[in-house]
Image (tube, rainbow, N blue to C red):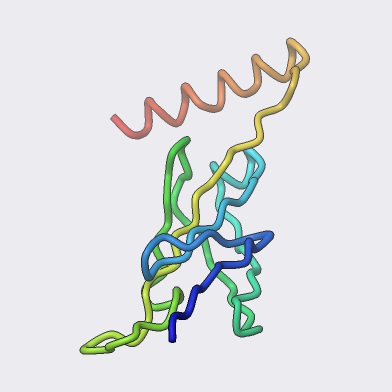
Length: 113
């Protein structure tokens, strides 16, 4: 007997070994100031994922043991959930708004030094 398993594509998750990968679009404001992602797992469980760090392009947040069940669990029973972020930048900004942002961000850099 030979079983052939085909994975059905999911609209939110992609499987990577025992991990699940999800990509979320977030606004530039949320990337800089934080947000909470609300996510429905494959088993129907709801997760609220706080994102408190500054999200930069290419950033991935790892949520331990929220991925696929492991076939032979040892110390862990599940893989991880990896959340990739796509930051949505504004298409255009008014000159006055650009100046406000430049002033605010340059003040932040001065405070961090």
